Image 1: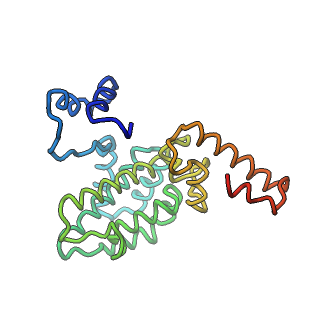
Image 2: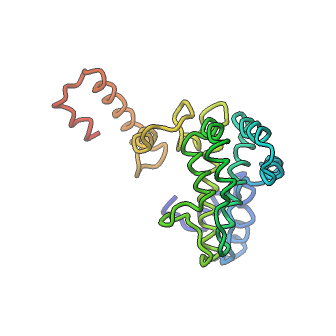
Image 3: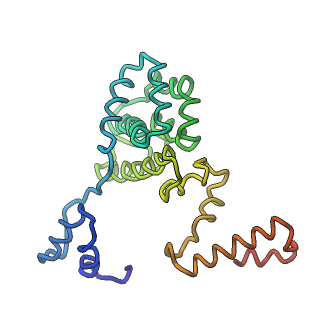
Length: 244
């Protein structure tokens, strides 16, 4: 597909049941070869609108810690609620785009003390640290550190990246592993010890997913790793594993 023209991609996807893209493709077919308007990618924000409003009503008061903790625990089995709680912290994070906005110390204290164990349990450390970072505007050297001088486009890029990350994180509340969830969690839906090893175990970077060569190489690597672990390959021959 990387060698296809825009019109060829149009013809390929026009027959697919991708509702949000069809209006764009139809405009291309009508003779508009360039789309200069800003395209806002569809995100599932309001699929969790009801949950977001529940969190917003309770979190804005911050006066019933037990009720908030119970709602957080409810996220463990509900992806929509899990997504909603992340989105609540994301909208709070947007305030740092305004001048002279400081971190809410009361909220931060609750996140780091009263709610910490509940958040760690349902979100794993990676999700918990993201929530803390959203409350503190990340570190000054981070790409996601917001400044009042940033353009709307710069803000949009950061929010889009965080939204995609949040969507992946929210899959942990599903009863089974998913393709999105496997990017951040192992088969037990837990945070892996090493993300380098984890990513290498699920894909070969540089290969198209489903490529038969990549599939074969993953199989070879898994078999060789198993033999190394069980001592069936002597250490001096381990270069075979490295080459694979």
